[in-house]
Length: 169
Figure 1 (cartoon, rainbow, N blue to C red):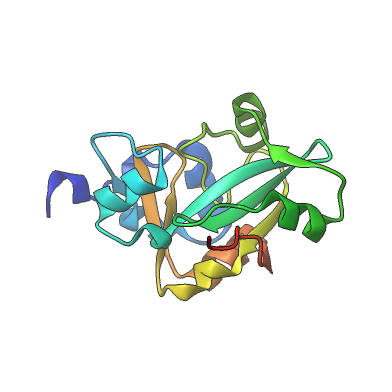
Figure 2 (figure 1 turned 90 degrees about the vertical axis):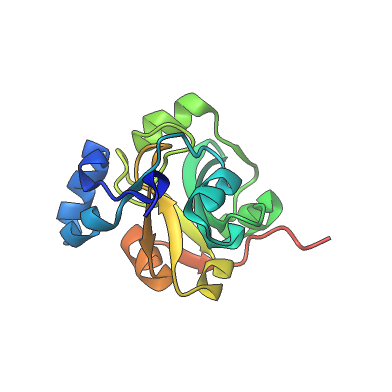
């Protein structure tokens, strides 16, 4: 095990640790990996973990007619905002600004986990996450990630399964 693979459950963000307890996922603490360098992008996280880019679960906040919505997307894909707009039945969908992300979730961009947020938001999960046995998501900081079976992650996030990926070009 290299230092980049070191497991350190004590490094879990306090808000995320509370969420794990509330969801009955205390055992997940021991599976959280902490990295010496920040992994703010899906590519950086995949390289640090040693997994496929598509095994990273990105937690992205958008504004749907001004209301925050969380989209869970595989790391190799981009969100199609028109598909999100259609799925939600709203007029306009845009990427949320950093201050809105922090205010809504309680976490900084690059460390937003799929659940355990400051406020309750609508959650959409792209079906592409189901292509893997395990996906990796941020554990509240840009330095921490955790593994989870995609169906379990989607259930704990309270997400609706959708197809909101940009078509491959």
